[in-house]
Amino acid sequence: MLQNFSGSTLAIALVATTAGGLSPQLAVAQSAADSAVRFRVEGFAGTTTDTRPIGKEKNKDSKGLLPSMSFSYGETFKGQFDLLAAEHAGDKSVAGAAHLGFKASAHTTLGVYVSKTRIKTPAKLNSERVGLELVYQGDKTAFNWIAGHEKVGAATVVAGTIPGYTVVDTYGDKDGVFNLADVTYYPRPNWALTLGHRYGSGRHGGVAGVERAYKWQSSTVSLFAEGRFGDKAYSGAWVGLRVRFGGNGASLRAVRDQETYTNHLKDDMYGIGNSRRRTDVALPPPPPEDDDNDCVCGACYAT
Image 1 (cartoon, rainbow, N blue to C red):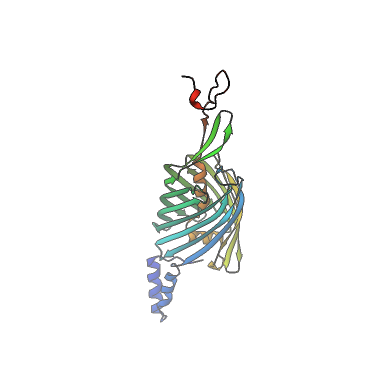
Image 2: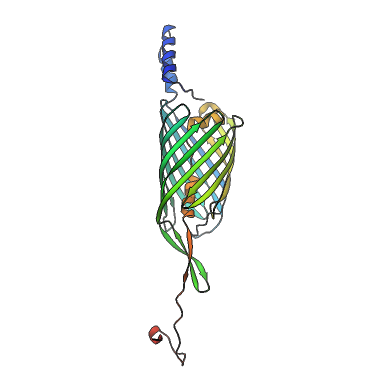
C-alpha cells in the first residue's frame, strides 16, 4: 500500500535521516510514493431492462469493459480517467469520463466530474454529464456522491403500431439533473458491500453490490456482483472481474483508498434509455368513398 505522509511527517523524517548521517533523499522518496499512476480494468456481463429499441437488435444483454487510470500528485491532487466499450440492450456504446479533484482533508476529496456516452447506431445518440464530486474515505466506510447537469441528444423511433395508432418513442432533447451516490462498508479488508442511489433523465434507481478481492502476484484481483433496481427501465444485474495492477497485491480497502474515484460509466449508459418517453400518435382516417365505391384519391372528400 502506498504510504501517505503529511508535510510535518516528511519534515520530521528529513531531519531524522539527516541527523543520522543518511541521505535526505530517502525521506523525499517516501513523499514521491504519493505521486503515482495506477491502472485497473473491469469486465462485466449480465442483463438489463433498459428499453432502447434503436438498433437492429433488441435484447436484454449487457456486457463490456471499463478501463480506468487513476493518478495523484503529492498529497493534494487526485484524478482519474475512465473508458467504456459495451454492448447494452442491443446497442453498442462507448463512453469516457474524467474526475479531477483535491484532498480537502485527510478523509475527504472534492472535485469535478465530466462524461460523454454515445450509442453507436444511425441515431448516434449522445449523453453528456458534468457535476461536482465528493468522496469520503473512513476506516471501514466510504461515501461517493456526484450531482450535476446532464443533456441527452434527441431521436424519434417508430416502435410499432396498434389499431388506429402509431407507437413512437422519443429520446432525449432535454436538459436535466443527475445524481450518483454510493455508501460502501468494508466488514473485512478484502470485502466491500455497497448500497446507493441513481437519478437520471427523470428515473430513480437503487444500487446494491458486493466485491471480494484476492492477491494475485503483485496485483489485486476481485470478483463482484451488482444490480440496479428502479423506475421503468432502470434495472439490471451484472457479475464481473476487476484487476488492479501493481500495489503489491494490497487489500481491497487499501487499493480503493489509493484510487479514490469510481468508474460510473455503466450508469451513464442508462441516461439515454431513461430519457425514453412513449406516445401513441393517431393515424389519419381513411378517405371516404362515394356511392359508386370508386374513390381512389382525396379529391372526393366530403365538404
